[in-house]
Image (cartoon, rainbow, N blue to C red):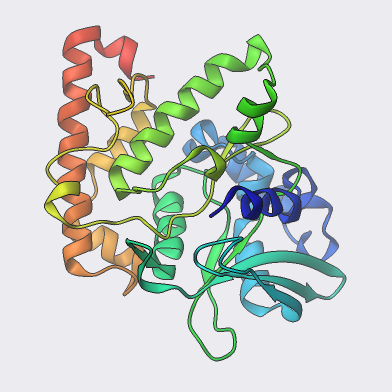
Length: 297
């Protein structure tokens, strides 16, 4: 996406803090909140426990809400020319991004299915950094439909404006950055840039735009994107949640297939596991160099 398109993203996506204020999703929010508060996912997730508890409700909204408005972005705004949809169900109206790009575009292979697969694997691992995303037909075509996050700035905005991070938030942000590197290493997201990293008002990290992920060529299965040898300088996975590392270590073809269905090919799933092995080797290297207590928490 271009900077202009991503600025629009930040203006349109739903407010994180407002999830539980939506009447039609109130349901058993208290019970779900209790489960989210005590679960391991809440401990490492960038989404808050209340937001994790509401994900299934947002998925249902994305699947069933009526499309009451929409505008297709121009190529100058976003390379994949997605649609900005206005969705309404009952008293709830929200916007979402729908894309059906599939194939090579300006030198990159793009796939709407990767957006949905990324969200499903995020949920399976307890990552909690990718906004709710579903497969939905629009104009008769299959595509991905994702809620957008409001009230955020991009990492690019922060850097350009010189916005300083409160010192109390630095440790959490650094750890989120290491997790982002782990995530993009696992799914081989070759298009992560600073305008695809959203920053909430309380300095949490949300990751968007995964249509250039799940690469399967040797370039993406023999080495990781984020290592000490990154072309832009060392970009390490210096500190990681032990629970997340254990879940990634436990991945296998059947587990991934059960999560993503037909969204990924067998070759793409195998590539994820090859990168998993590279990640485990890198984590072991970091542990040998720095000590387990410095790498895993």
